[in-house]
Image 1 (spheres, rainbow, N blue to C red):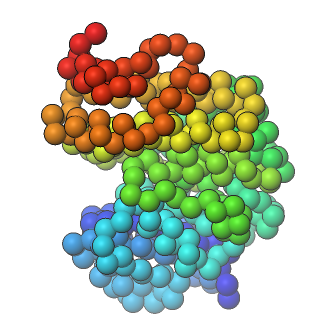
Image 2: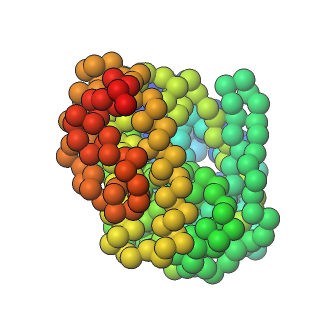
Length: 328
């Protein structure tokens, strides 16, 4: 039987997390043994140097599961490439990109057996809870009503009108129709950080049938390296500016409405300001990596969307150097 849903898990040196992730799906996901054929799980090992792949193989053997697919990259290609590999091999009509250090909400997969019509959707979006480093869980404010059969661009306008923002840039809070992604060539950018930000923006905007359910389907688990808590990395800083630039280029390409642009700009301005404030934390070598990578971006487009001179520091190597040195 062909599965309905393919769950794609990129994994790199994930021996600490992978069994917990699989248990969340196969033990606590909400499907009994007779219903497990509704799903498949594809673990893409991105050239780990630990025993992640072996744990996956032993888990499938021990639990007599035929619907776990293990794929290994022979070189490390990062998460975007691992997601694309999983999408290539997915048999389900729907796909779900799950991070290996997070878990799905207990019981959530039972919606596959519900009367919710999933056959024609391009994207299903749902909610998540966050679990902090101490194990405490907290939720955000959620929309309370179901939203059906709405074009994605209209949904973005709807969110802007009510000033609502809820994990919209995270790929793990969505199920996608595989055919929709492939037809629109909505693949993840490879070799960069934050690859899902622009991907989710484009996917939602281009979708014709967007479904939002006011239910919790995912637990985002913070780790010591979540959200720049770990090593300061010039590439991460540069890729943050990259996804802002790429988003602005997409807004321009599709001629997004003013209300979408203005609301989304609030997020991008927060991001740029955050990393501006953190720039001085980069060691010299990492700053030089940041500076070289950013210099190759279409930075002028920022000024097309940000009507102030507060981002002039980004526009030149001298400005970036002065920002790094905390020189006003």
